[in-house]
Length: 304
Image 1 (spheres, helix red, strand yellow):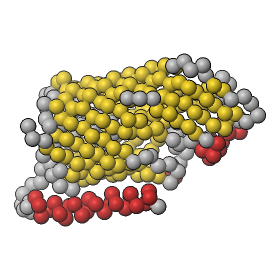
Image 2 (image 1 turned 90 degrees about the vertical axis):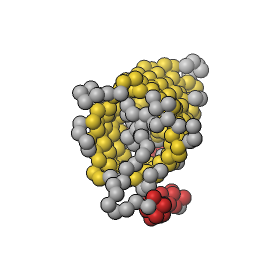
Image 3 (image 1 turned 60 degrees about the vertical axis):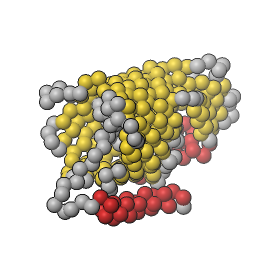
Image 4 (image 1 turned 90 degrees about the horizontal axis):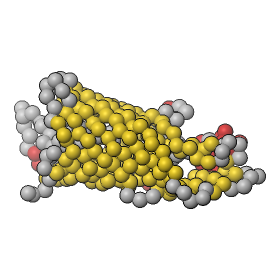
């Protein structure tokens, strides 16, 4: 019931704000609408762009689906001098068993090192890090529903802690006045500890408390196509680390999966954007697992 109420609220609010904003902005029909703020992401993947100096960007949203729903997500970012921005975020950076994505609090600092030209893309580098260990617990019912093969092999519960730090580089290039393309990559330092696996008719595996490490390649890309002054079509794809269970060694193993989001960004007013898209992951077993991603993005220009 709460999930349906959140979705309904996010669908109705932009329409209400649009009707109010139309009067507040006093935009004449003959006047072209122009969104005055710069953006630093597609849906979730970074671009080489940064927020304008002292622009405060607040994003609220989540991904909702029949089989899985992510927790309500939040993001706060601040532009620093027009050359960098800093961002505090709760997002799905790690995947797990039972169609669970871990929403981990992170902080990201990104700086533009090259503005780009007509022939060469803009370039930005950044560092994103979780600020604490995040614990994941998956119980028997989740494993039985989403991982029947592991359940048949005796797995009954999973418990571990993880954190991740990613250094990345992003490239952005305007192909023409309507189309911008974005791509990048990096290295993720994944660490995990306190692994506990419960098995039917077997011992419960518990590690020795040591911190395990894994270096993973992070790849992302996407595009933004401007349909009109208020509407953009967006596509993004990226890799995401997740934990699987090695039934032979009876421990967890870091791997990678792919995910993509395709959808629309609408400018409700000069300070409010509404993003909606369809999210699909490579581990999904059909369209019933597909999620709808919704978010509202607010902009506030702080006084200098």
